[in-house]
Length: 271
Image (cartoon, rainbow, N blue to C red):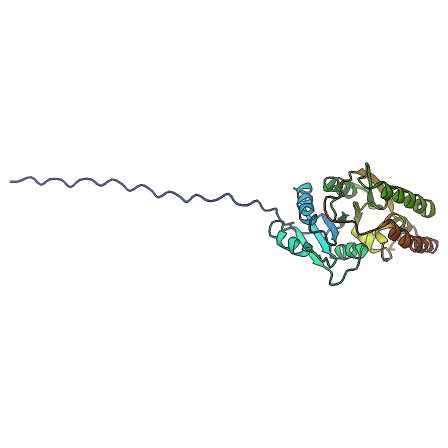
């Protein structure tokens, strides 16, 4: 009887290798629930500065529950398009856009009305305010008593032209003397304040330069902290020394009138 030759054994097929996945692109987390802080930034023709500023703010507030509200004041350049595209990378970024150019104060107010946090932090859109200082002001205000409604930044080592610094020093001196608000630098865009307190103030154009005096008029307390100031890297200033002087003359008279007409009840008790 002839023996059968055994069939050769087949080698077990190698398990297929799992496909190599590319490392996911880092995307910041969107705020959960009601944010603790709303960072409001007015921008007008700041396409060169706005995206980098938004990324800096996101880095500075990393780990905090916050949102960013950029308000495009009918820019004529690519500011709106760049910010809109950036929302995919920064989910906490919200972009609002005015249909008509309305100025910095209106842009700030638009952002504050839309803000969802009880504490608002404002920065100028040109990148000269350092976002690294913003969390310090925000956290200090959050830990402070309710009577303290605002912590304003005071710029040290200002990176502006000599003419601009001289004009600012003169304007701040006159304003402080007339309004007695104790503020040495109301032109600094970096401020942290309670949203509810801001919404109690009478609104007018250029109100952002008179927040200390108006907060005091409403019966709140205010404080100040030193902050960094940087060179403008792109774009041009939207103000001139003459333009500021022209607007401030009527604004000062208006705020002085508001102060003279204020009557503070010293608090309210429900019985």
